[in-house]
Image (cartoon, rainbow, N blue to C red; front, side, top):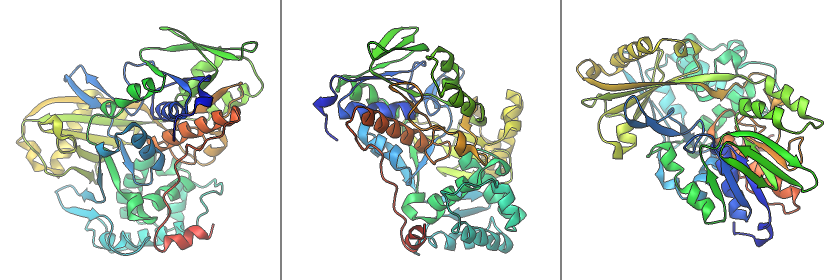
Length: 473
């Protein structure tokens, strides 16, 4: 999309430099608006960022973030700022049982949605009864209308469809609950169905998994220059205290602790609690109370990560799913991000408030003990340093009925728009949802000035036999 002089007189302040804010800012800057991107922290990325951890003197991601081939808007944002080649892609998922036995899931040459079934059917991690139960569930999920509202939770649906204990514990509670970062009884069925279709059924391309080969904040390093080249700017360490609207001038004043910023438009690209804190400073308008009531219906789920540096390698795997224990995922950061060197392992525990509540030493001790059950070399390796990160507000929940409380991009205030992964994108709490919300807010802004633009990247089309399923809705 080329720079358009007709936008040159319009300025926009984007509050929040997470994925939602950055995607909105870069799209609008490319279109020709003058963008001011404001972030209270000293680095970009929000809840998907990296920083220098003082306890270990290492730059770490606040948690391992992954994307999938179906994340078209996130990939589009990466392409826009020129970092798409910094994503490492894989189509295989290794599952390990305590004791070390491995199973590998991934695509075959069969057409979608059958491409994943050969490896699933030969996976040691599942009994024959588990495999038949999963096949029945996958087949039933094909008949769910993703656009229809549902009051049923994933847990209730799974029990109604006769899922075995092995299928529940080793697939649904681990793979899917981790993807949505919530327990199965608190996940709305359509969101689970969407994840299954996108990651396992639509196509092998849609389900391929990507991971950054550099720390996340390094991934966003081109953003300030991208904006500067288009007349924009980035303001870090600029906590926003208030935003006021001058009706006579048709202008917003965003008050930060680093100074005031004036603009024609504002995009608030914050987590729901961030917008909630900003509400009292905004003008009193019709619809503000309704938005506040929507925000009240949202809740957070935590993600914990344990960062371990050993004196030797404990595994050659890049990543793995760990079964039947509290820790869920292992990422070998020394292989995924080769420039780091050393022997750096990151463990991720999703969707568990119990682990997040553990004292630091107990959480680390439990993680090391469980890791040794999967990789015996841990017992001989020397632990050189360790960091525990608890993101207590990592994601928002997606319980049945939540869609009624996810706001659209247009706010009750003039020339102010809403972005954030929790906004109405049709996606759960993911970087893709953040990027989509940023593009949707940018589109809404352009419509406001009678200069409509399309920023939203199209979804990947289903392939193989899944094209028939898609055409039935």
